[in-house]
Length: 454
Ligand code: ARG
Image (cartoon, rainbow, N blue to C red; front, side, top):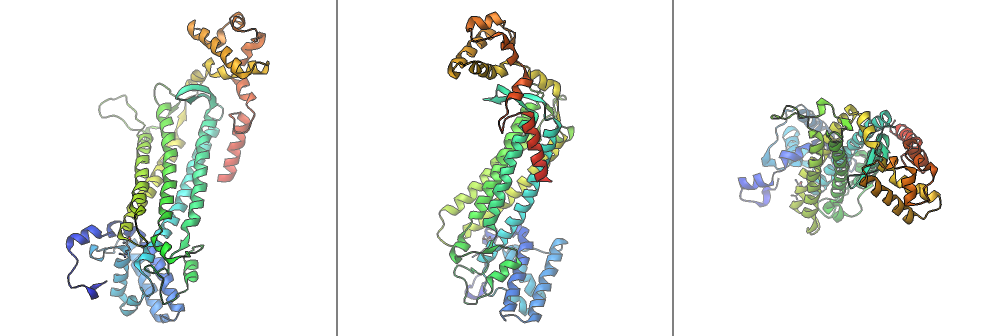
């Protein structure tokens, strides 16, 4: 592609070191779409005859078909996807092929391809997020009113429901969806026409090209357009955060499926056995998901570090952006798909949940609220309940089984109806504010998501 100035062939090790075709072939569909749009702009500008354009278009479509049929021979001598396709086009159609690269550089070409790739993958990730939300909403509905302890510091805190807990993940994934939709707006602008750095003296219709490729607009500065990888870092951050959310859910499910908690049972299809211990049923999907979050963060950090010290505009370091990007999309796509399946097949064990949520200490805060309703300032109420808890723990008596006398010995603010606090129906009924784990709230939120997710 650049033999004019060179008298030596590129060394084999340099080829091996610099090739990207082993992974950037994945951009082929976008590379071909970009080339057809670029050629059409050349046709409109009178740089190509109709016949030449026709040869380029059908040549590229033929190459596309061969790639999809697995019949295309990629060569590392041709370094990357752009040169592999262009050189094969010229081999097939001759002279018109050699005109294709007019007013274009691989620098704006690779930025275009990567943006198109990102956009398509963002779209499918958004679909997968919604699939996962649907599975969680269905599970939340199925077990909406099953009560469990909620935890802070992994210590029993206050009663919640399976419905409320699972809907927390639906909210997180909802934000992930919005974040990707917003990121997509910055991805979806066309850098084509920026050339190597400073546009071209041959002015093709950038807006027409952008429209053909479904971009919402064109980049406004040729140097920024060539150097910009913000959209990749931003995408990698969005994917990392999805990974974080899935990882936190995984940790909950690892706990829930343990003998100690027993709140849920994962299906045999989504767990694995041990080669040594016959009784084991391991939550490997959860653990892998937790583990893969590290790799998603690593991909984000790799690209940020690769970009941070680069002078404008293109530097070959930027070729290092693609493997992390591809890997994160592939990792998240599989993670979402397998977790969606796993959640759909998961069963909740109501007896184990009921046993755990029967712990009266979960209502210690409600007991303080009871005193507050009777006029006791909260800090004081907190202390009076703390004392009651100490008596209960010290005498090995459940908090709700302390006698009225025992309560009143702590404070006369405890009245005859003190035991009415230890009632889970009441505890949930009283929590009427938006966002609280009240059954009506849960039902409304399930309806909201079902409507939204279709
Ligand atoms: N394979 C290259 C990349 O991914 C394409 C751009 C090459 N540009 C260049 N000036 N060498 O970044």
